[in-house]
Length: 360
Image (cartoon, rainbow, N blue to C red; front, side, top):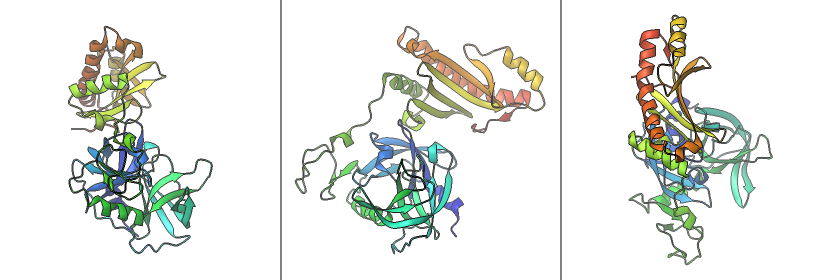
């Protein structure tokens, strides 16, 4: 049986402005493999490791037909060598494991068996399994009992229970061979007819002459005016917006020890908030008096699920008003204040650090 604690270091969460998925790192090639639909519309994404490190990664090769994408992390990952099942010897009822981040939750492993080694779906053969596969698992690896990659998790039929699929590992090995034709790791799209790598928008493949419909794969996603406002604000804090993206109009990043979240609430309000510390067990009365004094205006202190939060809420319409720059400054100031205040609450009221915090 393989050591899943070690294997988990190769599996990453992929965060984009549309949501999250999973991927896995191939150390020998210094690339991350995932599904194309996980990163579609993005030329750069954020990957998150099991120890919560976030690293910017560039999308360098996509095959929309097979739903495969390769990413190049800006830094090599601390991981082990993970092998492919080169013998292609898999059998029905063989035990398999699905590794990934379902629903954007922390790293999980689900277990099942192979229901079919060669199931035809939409003209492509997949490995079918009864292992639990949920949104967010897309792009993660399917592992056998020997710890080898036997496929990449690609989908779960919405109208079926206990039925998931993985593209067999030989398809990934073929893609890695084609990747060798791109030693500079420039962004490329694979021609669906001849497997030629295409590096710029074009109507016809220069290798086989096939008419192409790939222009959309060269365009980066268009951000809303609100997203542009937030990401300009993040840049003023020296926060890379790509790293902070955590879903549709949702951003998450650490400012020092404090985890800052920015998101839309009920389609009407923009919230900036931070879960700073857990409630104290020894100085609760003193803490309540401090919180009720509201010493941090225009921000608010509150308690939710035993955590002390620092929050700032504004109506979305105010962002396009004369208060726009004031709002931007308040968001920046909240992040700075949260990084200062969490230490104050720990030192003066014996609070415990929030589970989301990164103490100095």
